[in-house]
Length: 209
Image 1 (spheres, rainbow, N blue to C red):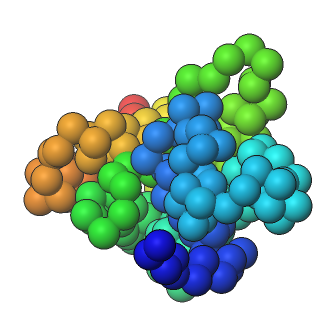
Image 2 (cartoon, one colour; image 1 turned 180 degrees about the horizontal axis):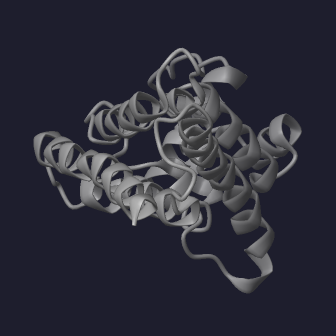
């Protein structure tokens, strides 16, 4: 009878990383308990629930891990050592770079992991929505700071600019999943940021009329 190897010792931190990558790749609802257990070294269902209580609780941990690691690219949006325009631009470029890297699933977990869910899982979508809204709020803060310091005029349409930049940011995920290269997305960001100057000039000129 062949000898079997010793089972790999369960490492909870590594298990959360594995879960994060699965949720990122397949989404919350499509990731099965069997997939999660297999990624953790084929642990038993009992061991899984003892370690994490539930798939939902594990997902929350995975989201927190993502935000504290890969999601740190969004911190540029609230970096006050940068000018508001630089903060927006760096946030977009860093996010595009991270989302197109091949060392992990493409796109953004906060966009893709709960894009569609059954009605009974709407609270999962709400949780992810709140995290995305934080980033949108940081972009709004950038624009308001630009108005306060004179980089943009008081007549700037804040809601329009926030929607413009946030729509682009969220759209990077689908572009990355579709295989659009970083170079193309980066070039698009350069064009997008030219809007900042256009808005500044147009609103200032309107104020002179």
